[in-house]
Image (cartoon, rainbow, N blue to C red; front, side):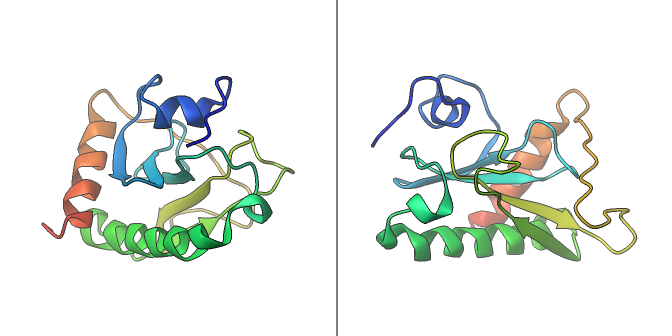
Length: 142
């Protein structure tokens, strides 16, 4: 596993930075965005440092998308979302230079319009509650 010591997401993957992890295996980690568009917004990252989608090794493409599907489903099961918004940036507008896929829970009338991403925050203890609900759905418990 390649880890860049100055990369915020590599620090999350390695446990150096705290995060509310909802999905983790040998190749990927999914954790709650600290500044979510909506509560339950997850970032899915490869555990090895990869900067953009074109840099992602071919053998990781299918598992990356499979995890995105699982997260999108978990949001409906665990959070009552009607759907999800799934997106990633390559270089332009990529706030952290480590490949990350946004999976954002959506409901009709939630106010998300176009590419304007309003950000919110979690109340004390709320992030762990959302993370636990998503972990339960991902494990088949919900």
